[in-house]
Length: 302
Image 1 (tube, helix red, strand yellow):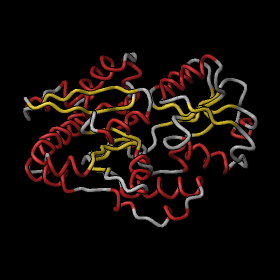
Image 2: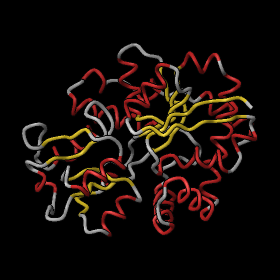
Image 3: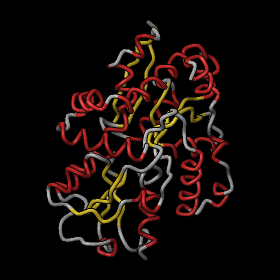
Image 4: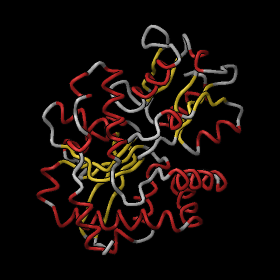
Protein backbone atom coordinates (compact mmCIF):
# COMPACT_ATOMS: atom_id res chain seq x y z
CA UNK A 1 0.00 0.00 0.00
CA UNK A 2 1.23 3.48 -0.85
CA UNK A 3 0.61 6.15 1.76
CA UNK A 4 -0.94 9.56 1.14
CA UNK A 5 -2.07 12.32 3.46
CA UNK A 6 -5.18 14.36 2.80
CA UNK A 7 -5.88 17.45 4.94
CA UNK A 8 -9.56 18.35 5.40
CA UNK A 9 -11.46 20.98 7.38
CA UNK A 10 -12.96 19.59 10.58
CA UNK A 11 -15.40 16.67 10.75
CA UNK A 12 -18.22 18.12 8.72
CA UNK A 13 -20.36 16.75 5.93
CA UNK A 14 -18.09 18.27 3.28
CA UNK A 15 -15.79 15.26 3.72
CA UNK A 16 -18.30 12.60 2.72
CA UNK A 17 -16.68 11.62 -0.62
CA UNK A 18 -13.30 10.84 0.96
CA UNK A 19 -14.90 9.16 3.98
CA UNK A 20 -16.77 6.96 1.49
CA UNK A 21 -13.62 6.27 -0.53
CA UNK A 22 -11.96 4.99 2.61
CA UNK A 23 -14.87 3.07 4.14
CA UNK A 24 -16.21 1.56 0.91
CA UNK A 25 -12.72 0.29 0.04
CA UNK A 26 -12.09 2.45 -3.03
CA UNK A 27 -8.74 3.71 -1.76
CA UNK A 28 -7.68 0.20 -0.76
CA UNK A 29 -8.68 -1.13 -4.18
CA UNK A 30 -6.19 1.31 -5.68
CA UNK A 31 -3.44 0.17 -3.29
CA UNK A 32 -3.64 3.41 -1.31
CA UNK A 33 -3.47 3.98 2.43
CA UNK A 34 -4.94 7.49 2.71
CA UNK A 35 -4.65 9.20 6.08
CA UNK A 36 -7.33 11.86 6.46
CA UNK A 37 -6.20 14.62 8.83
CA UNK A 38 -9.17 16.56 10.21
CA UNK A 39 -7.96 20.10 10.90
CA UNK A 40 -9.95 22.81 12.70
CA UNK A 41 -8.18 25.80 11.14
CA UNK A 42 -8.73 26.45 7.43
CA UNK A 43 -5.40 28.27 7.22
CA UNK A 44 -3.64 25.22 8.65
CA UNK A 45 -5.16 22.97 5.98
CA UNK A 46 -3.66 25.20 3.32
CA UNK A 47 -0.33 25.48 5.14
CA UNK A 48 -0.02 21.68 5.26
CA UNK A 49 -0.53 21.47 1.51
CA UNK A 50 1.98 24.25 0.92
CA UNK A 51 4.74 22.80 3.08
CA UNK A 52 4.21 19.16 2.07
CA UNK A 53 2.81 17.75 5.31
CA UNK A 54 -0.21 16.82 3.20
CA UNK A 55 -0.11 15.80 -0.45
CA UNK A 56 -3.74 16.72 -1.12
CA UNK A 57 -6.32 18.92 0.59
CA UNK A 58 -10.02 19.52 0.70
CA UNK A 59 -9.28 23.21 1.07
CA UNK A 60 -11.11 26.51 0.93
CA UNK A 61 -10.93 27.33 -2.78
CA UNK A 62 -10.05 30.96 -2.22
CA UNK A 63 -6.71 29.83 -0.80
CA UNK A 64 -5.75 28.49 -4.24
CA UNK A 65 -6.54 31.89 -5.72
CA UNK A 66 -4.56 33.69 -3.02
CA UNK A 67 -1.64 31.29 -3.52
CA UNK A 68 -1.59 31.96 -7.25
CA UNK A 69 -1.52 35.72 -6.64
CA UNK A 70 1.75 35.28 -4.75
CA UNK A 71 3.36 32.99 -7.31
CA UNK A 72 2.45 29.67 -5.70
CA UNK A 73 1.79 26.39 -7.48
CA UNK A 74 -1.49 25.23 -5.94
CA UNK A 75 -4.17 24.06 -8.34
CA UNK A 76 -7.74 22.78 -8.16
CA UNK A 77 -8.03 19.23 -9.52
CA UNK A 78 -11.51 18.30 -8.31
CA UNK A 79 -14.72 19.64 -6.88
CA UNK A 80 -16.12 19.36 -3.38
CA UNK A 81 -18.66 21.89 -2.14
CA UNK A 82 -19.60 23.26 -5.57
CA UNK A 83 -22.75 25.01 -4.32
CA UNK A 84 -23.42 26.64 -0.97
CA UNK A 85 -24.99 24.26 1.57
CA UNK A 86 -25.43 27.02 4.18
CA UNK A 87 -28.01 29.06 5.99
CA UNK A 88 -27.09 32.29 7.78
CA UNK A 89 -28.17 31.36 11.30
CA UNK A 90 -28.71 33.93 14.05
CA UNK A 91 -29.59 33.74 17.70
CA UNK A 92 -33.26 34.16 18.71
CA UNK A 93 -34.41 37.76 18.67
CA UNK A 94 -32.70 38.66 15.39
CA UNK A 95 -35.30 38.55 12.64
CA UNK A 96 -33.60 39.79 9.47
CA UNK A 97 -30.26 40.88 8.02
CA UNK A 98 -30.83 44.45 9.20
CA UNK A 99 -30.90 43.10 12.73
CA UNK A 100 -27.19 42.26 12.44
CA UNK A 101 -26.18 45.91 12.70
CA UNK A 102 -23.68 46.21 15.54
CA UNK A 103 -23.53 42.43 15.99
CA UNK A 104 -20.71 39.85 15.98
CA UNK A 105 -20.73 37.49 13.01
CA UNK A 106 -18.59 34.38 12.99
CA UNK A 107 -16.56 33.46 9.90
CA UNK A 108 -14.02 30.74 9.19
CA UNK A 109 -11.26 33.32 8.65
CA UNK A 110 -11.03 36.99 7.75
CA UNK A 111 -8.60 36.39 4.88
CA UNK A 112 -10.58 33.69 3.09
CA UNK A 113 -13.45 31.26 3.46
CA UNK A 114 -16.90 32.51 4.42
CA UNK A 115 -15.96 36.14 5.11
CA UNK A 116 -16.30 37.53 1.57
CA UNK A 117 -19.65 35.80 1.16
CA UNK A 118 -20.95 37.22 4.44
CA UNK A 119 -19.76 40.69 3.43
CA UNK A 120 -21.60 40.41 0.11
CA UNK A 121 -24.85 39.21 1.70
CA UNK A 122 -24.85 42.00 4.26
CA UNK A 123 -23.83 44.67 1.75
CA UNK A 124 -27.02 43.86 -0.18
CA UNK A 125 -28.94 44.67 3.02
CA UNK A 126 -27.10 47.98 3.46
CA UNK A 127 -24.62 46.79 6.08
CA UNK A 128 -20.93 47.32 5.40
CA UNK A 129 -17.83 45.96 7.09
CA UNK A 130 -16.30 47.10 9.40
CA UNK A 131 -18.52 50.09 10.19
CA UNK A 132 -21.77 48.22 10.71
CA UNK A 133 -20.78 44.88 12.26
CA UNK A 134 -17.84 42.87 13.56
CA UNK A 135 -16.41 39.75 11.94
CA UNK A 136 -15.06 37.15 14.35
CA UNK A 137 -12.56 34.64 12.99
CA UNK A 138 -13.63 31.47 14.76
CA UNK A 139 -12.86 28.57 12.42
CA UNK A 140 -15.14 26.21 10.50
CA UNK A 141 -18.81 25.46 11.05
CA UNK A 142 -18.43 23.27 14.14
CA UNK A 143 -16.55 26.04 15.94
CA UNK A 144 -19.10 28.63 14.78
CA UNK A 145 -21.91 26.46 16.09
CA UNK A 146 -20.32 26.23 19.52
CA UNK A 147 -19.80 30.00 19.67
CA UNK A 148 -23.34 30.66 18.51
CA UNK A 149 -24.74 28.43 21.22
CA UNK A 150 -22.53 29.98 23.90
CA UNK A 151 -23.31 33.57 22.88
CA UNK A 152 -19.80 34.32 21.61
CA UNK A 153 -21.23 35.36 18.24
CA UNK A 154 -24.66 36.55 17.16
CA UNK A 155 -24.77 34.88 13.75
CA UNK A 156 -22.78 32.79 11.29
CA UNK A 157 -23.11 30.54 8.27
CA UNK A 158 -24.06 27.00 9.28
CA UNK A 159 -23.80 24.10 6.87
CA UNK A 160 -26.33 21.33 6.47
CA UNK A 161 -27.18 19.52 8.71
CA UNK A 162 -26.06 21.92 11.48
CA UNK A 163 -28.47 24.54 10.16
CA UNK A 164 -31.32 22.04 10.60
CA UNK A 165 -30.16 21.28 14.13
CA UNK A 166 -29.98 25.02 14.89
CA UNK A 167 -33.52 25.67 13.66
CA UNK A 168 -34.84 22.78 15.75
CA UNK A 169 -33.20 24.39 18.79
CA UNK A 170 -34.86 27.77 18.25
CA UNK A 171 -32.26 29.64 16.27
CA UNK A 172 -33.29 31.74 13.25
CA UNK A 173 -32.41 31.45 9.55
CA UNK A 174 -31.92 34.89 8.03
CA UNK A 175 -31.25 33.73 4.47
CA UNK A 176 -30.13 30.89 2.25
CA UNK A 177 -27.12 32.20 0.29
CA UNK A 178 -27.66 29.66 -2.51
CA UNK A 179 -30.79 31.58 -3.52
CA UNK A 180 -28.63 34.65 -4.20
CA UNK A 181 -25.46 32.91 -5.39
CA UNK A 182 -26.52 29.66 -7.11
CA UNK A 183 -22.94 28.61 -7.98
CA UNK A 184 -20.05 29.15 -5.59
CA UNK A 185 -16.97 26.94 -5.24
CA UNK A 186 -16.51 27.00 -1.48
CA UNK A 187 -14.11 24.07 -1.10
CA UNK A 188 -12.27 21.94 -3.63
CA UNK A 189 -9.72 19.16 -4.01
CA UNK A 190 -6.34 20.87 -4.26
CA UNK A 191 -2.70 19.89 -4.83
CA UNK A 192 0.55 21.60 -5.72
CA UNK A 193 1.51 21.22 -9.37
CA UNK A 194 5.04 20.12 -8.52
CA UNK A 195 3.86 17.22 -6.36
CA UNK A 196 1.20 16.21 -8.89
CA UNK A 197 3.66 16.11 -11.78
CA UNK A 198 6.17 14.10 -9.77
CA UNK A 199 3.55 11.61 -8.56
CA UNK A 200 1.24 11.20 -11.53
CA UNK A 201 0.66 7.47 -10.96
CA UNK A 202 -0.31 7.92 -7.32
CA UNK A 203 -2.58 10.83 -8.17
CA UNK A 204 -4.32 8.92 -10.95
CA UNK A 205 -5.14 6.12 -8.51
CA UNK A 206 -6.44 8.61 -5.95
CA UNK A 207 -8.65 10.26 -8.55
CA UNK A 208 -10.11 6.91 -9.62
CA UNK A 209 -11.20 6.26 -6.03
CA UNK A 210 -12.42 9.86 -5.77
CA UNK A 211 -14.68 9.43 -8.81
CA UNK A 212 -16.06 6.10 -7.61
CA UNK A 213 -16.90 7.64 -4.23
CA UNK A 214 -18.99 10.38 -5.81
CA UNK A 215 -21.03 7.87 -7.81
CA UNK A 216 -21.48 5.73 -4.69
CA UNK A 217 -22.74 8.71 -2.66
CA UNK A 218 -25.58 9.37 -5.08
CA UNK A 219 -26.51 5.69 -5.40
CA UNK A 220 -26.40 4.65 -1.72
CA UNK A 221 -28.61 6.75 0.53
CA UNK A 222 -28.62 4.39 3.51
CA UNK A 223 -24.91 3.63 3.24
CA UNK A 224 -24.03 7.32 2.98
CA UNK A 225 -26.16 8.11 6.01
CA UNK A 226 -24.44 5.39 8.04
CA UNK A 227 -21.00 6.76 7.17
CA UNK A 228 -22.09 10.32 8.02
CA UNK A 229 -23.32 9.19 11.43
CA UNK A 230 -20.13 7.26 12.16
CA UNK A 231 -17.70 9.92 10.99
CA UNK A 232 -19.41 13.11 12.19
CA UNK A 233 -21.52 11.93 15.11
CA UNK A 234 -24.77 13.47 13.87
CA UNK A 235 -28.11 11.75 14.47
CA UNK A 236 -29.41 9.52 11.64
CA UNK A 237 -32.36 11.75 10.75
CA UNK A 238 -30.05 14.75 10.35
CA UNK A 239 -27.69 12.69 8.20
CA UNK A 240 -30.63 11.87 5.95
CA UNK A 241 -31.70 15.51 5.70
CA UNK A 242 -28.17 16.41 4.65
CA UNK A 243 -28.08 13.64 2.04
CA UNK A 244 -31.40 14.80 0.58
CA UNK A 245 -30.24 18.41 0.27
CA UNK A 246 -26.86 17.53 -1.20
CA UNK A 247 -28.45 15.22 -3.78
CA UNK A 248 -31.30 17.58 -4.72
CA UNK A 249 -28.93 20.52 -5.25
CA UNK A 250 -25.98 18.39 -6.50
CA UNK A 251 -23.70 20.13 -4.03
CA UNK A 252 -21.10 17.41 -4.52
CA UNK A 253 -20.44 17.20 -8.27
CA UNK A 254 -21.58 13.91 -9.79
CA UNK A 255 -18.58 14.00 -12.13
CA UNK A 256 -16.15 15.04 -9.39
CA UNK A 257 -15.13 18.23 -11.18
CA UNK A 258 -14.82 21.75 -9.87
CA UNK A 259 -17.47 24.17 -11.10
CA UNK A 260 -16.22 26.80 -13.54
CA UNK A 261 -19.13 29.17 -12.77
CA UNK A 262 -18.64 28.41 -9.08
CA UNK A 263 -14.95 29.36 -9.13
CA UNK A 264 -15.76 32.44 -11.22
CA UNK A 265 -18.38 33.54 -8.67
CA UNK A 266 -15.82 33.11 -5.90
CA UNK A 267 -13.24 35.18 -7.77
CA UNK A 268 -15.67 38.00 -8.48
CA UNK A 269 -17.23 38.03 -5.01
CA UNK A 270 -13.92 38.14 -3.17
CA UNK A 271 -12.50 40.74 -5.55
CA UNK A 272 -15.52 42.99 -5.07
CA UNK A 273 -15.54 42.75 -1.29
CA UNK A 274 -11.77 42.84 -0.80
CA UNK A 275 -11.24 45.58 -3.38
CA UNK A 276 -8.92 43.46 -5.54
CA UNK A 277 -9.98 44.53 -9.03
CA UNK A 278 -7.11 42.67 -10.68
CA UNK A 279 -8.54 39.39 -9.44
CA UNK A 280 -11.99 40.13 -10.86
CA UNK A 281 -10.44 40.05 -14.33
CA UNK A 282 -9.08 36.53 -13.98
CA UNK A 283 -10.70 33.39 -15.35
CA UNK A 284 -11.80 30.40 -13.30
CA UNK A 285 -10.01 28.12 -15.75
CA UNK A 286 -6.68 29.67 -14.69
CA UNK A 287 -6.94 27.83 -11.37
CA UNK A 288 -8.34 24.46 -12.50
CA UNK A 289 -6.50 21.50 -14.04
CA UNK A 290 -8.96 18.82 -15.17
CA UNK A 291 -6.31 16.60 -16.75
CA UNK A 292 -6.10 14.32 -13.73
CA UNK A 293 -9.82 13.74 -13.39
CA UNK A 294 -10.17 13.29 -17.14
CA UNK A 295 -7.47 10.61 -17.10
CA UNK A 296 -9.13 8.86 -14.16
CA UNK A 297 -12.54 8.94 -15.84
CA UNK A 298 -11.09 7.56 -19.07
CA UNK A 299 -9.38 4.71 -17.23
CA UNK A 300 -12.69 3.83 -15.54
CA UNK A 301 -14.55 3.97 -18.84
CA UNK A 302 -16.70 6.83 -17.53
